[in-house]
Image 1 (cartoon, rainbow, N blue to C red):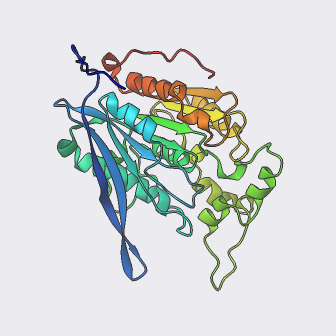
Image 2 (cartoon, rainbow, N blue to C red):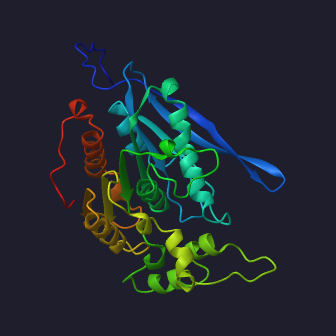
Image 3 (cartoon, rainbow, N blue to C red):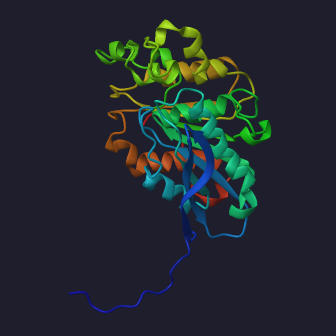
Length: 309
């Protein structure tokens, strides 16, 4: 039994958040049909211009469920940020389709900034696994003509910060040091091999990712690093048996070698998409880091001193 009661003095700690469901951000030809690519948006009901975070879901290059990671996306929206989550084409579509979709999703935010109240100087990208790969790629090709789809301007590719959770930086070394996994990733049936080489039809295109290093480098974010990139947050679990945690190490080293700002975080006990990634410790760490990098620090109490979680 619950007694009747009155609640007094409710503090307004977060904005009301509206969700726009399954908005079409672009249309792409697919055979004799047109495919609509969707995103969903969380829009805080505030009057000031807001930072935005564009989330790309993981799925092994075979799926792109953009309704994932609702806890993290809601936490960012509760801080007053616009949060978009976008699907993208996966295999059998061949690279660079996946990147073209990511850049068109970002362009949609630029073009609709006034409608959603977005400060276009404060747009970050975020992703896990294959989505982390996309986020890293968006960072290394930020404000550049690299992998630029038709109709998207260079200015519409600029991002202010990058967050990658157990993401991929180098397609040729995804399984480095993991027994069994390393051999699978080197084979012709791995998702990255199909992403780069395409699907065989009439002509046998099957080949391991390392058999065509030029194509693999063209499709790896680590090979686009140069000075002057936005800040990166690279997070990886030390128990990941799908994507080697060395991927974050390779990327962090290459970024630092070229004078870029990067924070690398190793999460003890975490695997690939395991429950650790959905806990308040991780969520708070990411939201705090983004608040700092997007200069939104007056909106949240900061706590990002730890380097290992």
